[in-house]
Image: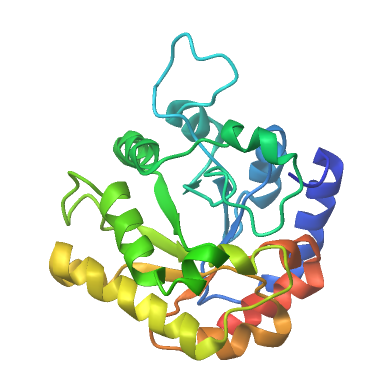
Length: 252
């Protein structure tokens, strides 16, 4: 939840010339809902696609305040972030009263409903998974993530998930300045790919697995050099055009 429409537009316009010669990296921007039309217009004809930060699983109806897959497609969106830790009420740095955590009530079931809802529209799901600090300290990282994957992808086939992107975001490294060290990030991403292979077979090799958790220009190249880290779900660093462009070039 950053940047007014004019500021998001200015950031996009600053980024475009910095990445116009980068042809071997898929680039996405995920503005707030209000800014989506402006960013879609600004990136028209470029290599940058626009992502929504969330979606609702119904097409229309008495669901005040929610946005459907059809609305996103009509607005020009290509990708949808689904199951981000913050929509699940799993914050690396808590900036709301603890008594309001129940407002952020995403579950594996709702994540699954959202993925199923966007696929018929040709939208690309970016599925977020990851453990919080207590789960990591309890050595439960792998079990938590496997459970999130199983819940999110329930009743889907290998054909259904052909376009899937999975973003591993260790919750304790989001907005805290902490970064999962590179060997551990690679280990978890490899575990994700292995689990997808067990469930869905060969399609797991073509699924893109991103790392998200304080990705910045200074650590991007090392992270992206790992065999099972195919890119980044970039947070705060994406709010600076030069920093984000440097991350994109590290991926190239």
